Amino acid sequence: MSRVSYGFFAGCWIAVSLVLVSCSSPSYQPTKPWHTAEGFKNLHGAEKDTGFFDYWYMRWFGDVEWKDQAEQAHLIPVAEPDLAAIQSPDPDERIVTWVGHSTFLLQYQGMNVLTDPIFSERASPVSFAGPSRLTELPLSLDELPPIDAVVISHDHYDHLDEASILALGPDVHYYVPLKLKSWFVELGIAESQVTELDWWQSASLASGDLSVYATPSQHWSGRSLWDRFETLWASYVIDIGDWRVWFGGDTGYNEVQFKEIGERFAPVDLALNPVGAYLPRWFMEMPHVDPYQATLIHRDIGAKQSVTMHWGAFQLAAEGIQRTLDDIAAAREQAGLSEQEFQIMAVGETQQF
Image (tube, rainbow, N blue to C red; front, side, top):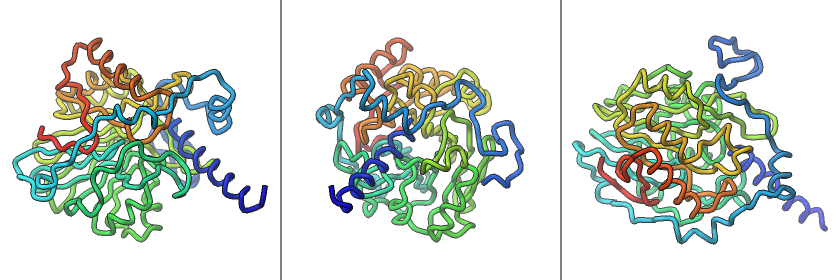
């Protein structure tokens, strides 16, 4: 193999590894229990003890059946976004558009808020390798209204996409977990446009009726093999006027933290609730809930409605699309929730809540 070919395939291997394993500064002073001298840690449940080599051993040498989600992509519900509602929204209507994965556009009372925006074809550090979209991107950046605020849950490539942030530009206000501000500043975003939040901290947007509260999640961080746990991860309560939305970001489940969120913030009008990338459980249980655990989060935080997310855009784990749909339906029935209370939106769908 030539050096060029070797370099290309090595780059592909590293790019895919960084993204898929992820879905699997030392000078600051600790101020909270989840802060350590080396970085951040989860307080409850099992700590992450799998990594790069565990993933590839499981993927290529283990006995895990790895479904090809691209072959089942036709099962993913898709819809045309309502561009008229998106570009000229009624300020009295609570409008949600699911762009895919963990990217939602929330619109109410003249505010336009994006969660974990990824508009790239791949969730990857490079453009030529890594998980690619299972369906077409339903909404382009050019079709968005002016964005007031962006909420970032953590730094993994399927949640923090450099190309999308650069395209959104410096006029957006970014809410990010601790230790992530420097990443934005290095891209040319002014420090004043980036607000870092620790768990249970909050900030408000001066130009509109928006308050953002960082709340706990069970996950981890890292954009390379050498920076694990150096930045914080979070879920968020987002208040736009009298509309309360919880954005789960990316999380595993424990019996403590989500009940704490519910104690402080219930009732929650709408939960954007992750359900995907959950098999095999021995590898994915710490960082990712399965659909039934997502119904437990729905209950714990006091959500009136949940919309499922973190599935149907990029393949990050072993389960197939049909398995995901079946498990969501079974979890909903087991929890005694209706299809409206715990619902599947179509990729691209615009809905009023």
